[in-house]
Image 1: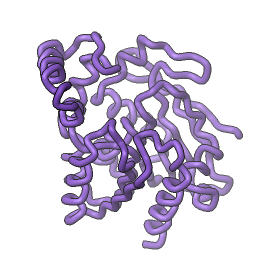
Image 2: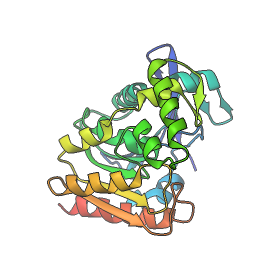
Image 3: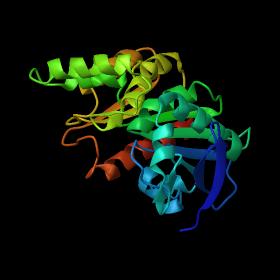
Length: 265
């Protein structure tokens, strides 16, 4: 499947590869995907879009994937990748890419998975072209709070000590539970929840009932409470963890219906 790439120049002498493909007929509507925290490269081709929202709906949209700085199809620059792994940079990098790739009057449907899901509401709050958001496998609280909430009683004392250390060394590249202190610190606040409360556009949250990465209980409570005043749908798959390994087809069906409902309005 064909796709095009655009090199986006970012602050701090960084770049990322924006990969996109256009609908067969001229369209002024886009599906934009913000990926998970890993270093997997996504091509932004039509087949990826079909897998995400279904064959029928995919015909209507241009598709853009915002890859991570330092990530290319056959190479990962770990230094650049780590340098960019901060929430404030993720937000600014996404906004810069949207400005450079998507025409000013086009409409955007923003879909995020895992780390991308945490950032979709924040990005949407800063770009008025975004008309809907979808959060797949994302929580609502700060990451450090979630880690502490998910810790077992035996783990909690060690987690509390580690978190105190992170607050004392917020710029450190030392690692804890897979991420640098600086990354954990950048995601410490409830930015996702605050942004959701301020949005009035349609939103859908898709969660796995067996997800042990996010603070699932808090996420469900937050989303249900926000949905009482905001147009947010919540879908929870029972036999599903954080990675949605056997559930991407059901996710696709939910997203297809969600977009279809928006189209009818």
